[in-house]
Length: 477
Image (cartoon, rainbow, N blue to C red; front, side, top):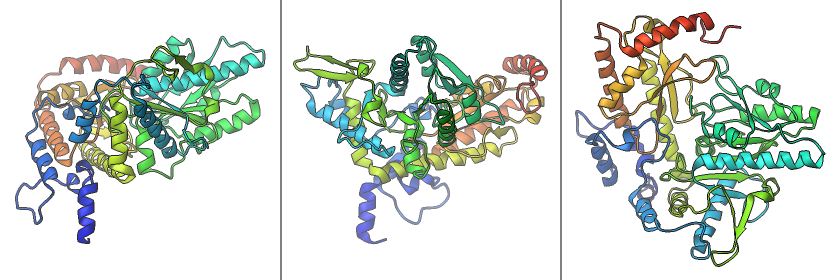
């Protein structure tokens, strides 16, 4: 590499997007070459990290690390109320720039200078806005046809995030769930179509299912809907819940068609405070075109010194996260995001391989498509084990780690799994520390002479499971 190229690489590559973060720290011999001081600092700091730090929380998807300049910038903007555009007009412009950048990342066809989207406090509000827009469009179309509007529904997998249950309850919209199974671990297109009718406001595939880390096949669902809509003229659209995948897919799988390149994808929501790499309190929703955002969702006030129009469930909201998002966009650029997401994915794949090789465990999926994955106990090992994954969770807590154990959704609810979410700030060294602590915890648990309370409870459930489920873990017909 030329000296000038090396210099530019040093300036442009983020610490957690560097090649060094994919390597274990030296343990036996002096390294042949030195590394940048900020990387050496981070590796040493990781080695001596206090065990109550949020970066050891592998349960959360939320960003727990931003560089000092980003943190400083957001701290300096802590008093900014985004909604007060008369006082902070440039923040409003910056917000529009962020929407433009995301819309183009997702291949928006919209020709307007400013793409159609909205700021949200997390992906939960963004999902709500996407769902409400679909509901209002459906309602207006039904009213124009002189048809009733009292029985709306939407279709989603049983692996939904809890916001969709809130959406269904708060707006009184039936949520039609498609169960997951070992044979169908993601949203099956034909099962979707079976649940659609003239009252379906939208279908909601998920990119980065919270329960499993897998992606629903949006293109296959789009194709199934295209045939269904041509036959029925129901024109059911898609809202993509891309809370995780919205900032993974464009950088690691740019060729994958899941976004506005598909005919029936009319809106996409994501979480800026997850893999958008911004501290908590930020979500985004983008529509394919302005015509898909119902006018009823825009509210105007003039008591702040000017006419202000806003789309959102919340009015006042922090402006600091907008600055943080725009900073990350211009600080990292496409390649910087790609490097960070690549490293997170590689470390997730490393953990997936190492955990899957442990005699006690089996991975739920053979592939890792987002920087998170789940695993469960091998059936043969579980038969003689005196402990459960809940006990392993408690053991890891004693070492400072939060690695959640939980039961799966309907139809496979008796399956208990553990999940790891790898985020920016989690290095290969930290992964090795986790694996060492996990092996030590398992070794202790294997010395138990009597079953733990959680194992006794699971054995009771197992008897019920055997009556209701077949050997593959799926409900008997």
